Image (tube, rainbow over all chains, first blue to last red; front, side):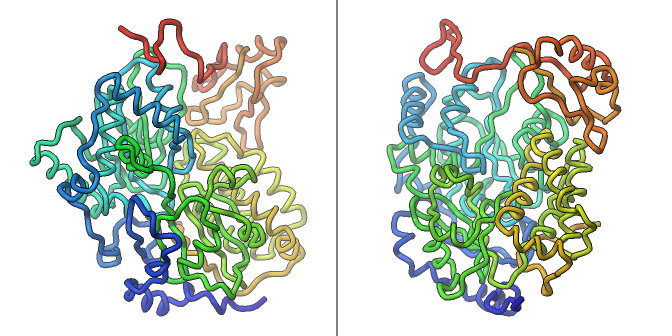
Length: 452
Length: 84
């Protein structure tokens, strides 16, 4: 196996050098994917310190759009308080089919109709607790366009008659919190009408951004996932929207194009590139815009983040930034993460590192996750190290079946998806490992260290 | 339509359910219950209820009918909200 020669991301000095001169990032000169951006300017986040929200000195500098600028650009926010405003918004949601951008892509109209059917005090949440370590699009959006997100949250809270409207952030994301609080202060000072918005910093752990964990935390419990059990009618309810979804809602309410683009975090050779890409852009074109050379084809791409799927490079060549089209072939962009695996890297070693990380991030509440994820991670680790006993692969497949769909939240399903895609996309490579061959060279993906 | 459900957060893997309803609940290799995904067969409903009753953690329950997400209550308006 060749060393990872053309992957500057394994060379920290290369990353650092390019990172510091990020104003010359390739996509800045990439009109094909930039000209119809409606949400943000692209930004490079460092590859180091992945998995922590705030590391002083390592965050990209961003210009925050002020309230005056926001209003001059888009005009005042329409109201959704009365029935006609709400119905108009629902009709618009149906027409453009706005779906959630937190990863699950559930149509917003479906969530709203479900919320309107049930009684009980409602809390609407703008979820900015971006737990997927590779992703930084939500922090970027909140820091650049806080008023757009706050408009979306206000609209959802008004339309659904919510009692509370909350911006939910990771506890360690001080940078985003400062921006959002300053924006809220600006709105109060300008006498902006709308629901009162709270900013709540949850814990910083991986599952603190999971919607049932947020719901439980906002009603006085721990920020841990729960299962919805048959409850009393009129019990408190929580509706969680990703911040990008709400920003798009704010555009939609003003009759602006709201769904023609998608925010991506592309793990490039120089850093994590947060950018807005037109829907239908070819994935390869997007990768080139983030600094991936056209000459050296990666082994494949990790699509949708650590809980996503490996995609063979041949399939990447045919793929576009189009969620429905990807879903039709069993793939998903999830929360918009695209992470190529450079030529020469070992997909089994990468999968082992990622599954070990995911196992360490379990809330340790559900047996199939608490015991299943370490079992899965152990199997993949032994395959990567070529220390797997006979039958390891069969055991791994059995455990995937035993874990799938059996957690309170979908955390274990992410590991199942990732490992399942490793077995199908890199089956031959896994065969080599199962027969005792091992790859030299380390893990090239920026996987946070697992605390033991 | 009747379904047997388990709350994996409440479940501690004690295993009583599989003991009293072995035809409906099986345990995985870590000792946690695996319940049928779809509706229960008519002949299994009594056993499922026995499993629910047996759980010291009250982690199991029986759902009588699957909720239809698109169902609109009588008297509801276009967006499904009942006028008061």
